[in-house]
Length: 254
Image 1: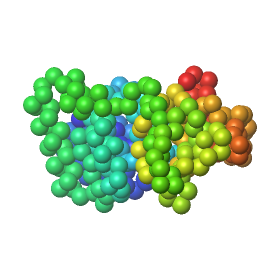
Image 2: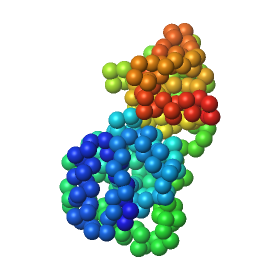
Image 3: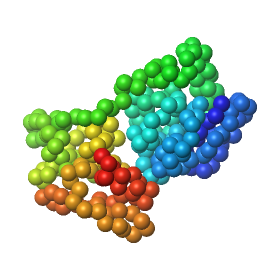
Image 4: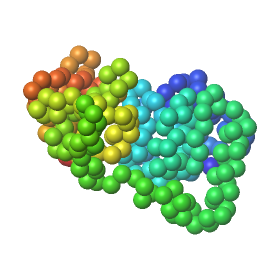
């Protein structure tokens, strides 16, 4: 079984590979990848593996970004230290969600589950992909507005009025083009799933920015990008070296 491991901690990646090969001698590890960028590049250049293990928090973002950048036609087992992404994980190709530290017994159950699904569904991978519920993936278009509670009142904020989303001290906020700062109860990860990826980009862990808010982009230290945003209170957002190519591609080809 050709298996890909996406994990940004080298020791964790090697330990996972060793446990998998101990459990099943037929498992062949194709590669150990450590970032969103390298994973997207690898998946674009190679045939789909039989199985992918993904950590969620990677050095240059969250692994859900991989699934938005490239069509993944492989079952995925997520391995993470966080339990908050479970619902989001099962909206994509996930057949299991394992919490770190990984136990050999849990890995075995996941592999047994994959074997069972393959035996029951037969037509691999088409029927299994259907079982994943691909229709649950966010479709182009995204939400047209967000319902905000502010000063004891509820009111909708049209998405077209939003310059960016930001997280500060663990809380999420909408920043509108006219300078309003409005609270949201969802995390940025949840918000990102509801947005049209043609109109909004996850610049880093703190910001999701609108295309219409981008005023100009400048090269920055260590090959980062400094993105200057429009608005009543102009803001500069930094895009990492690892995401710079993806960001520029989004600007040019959204």
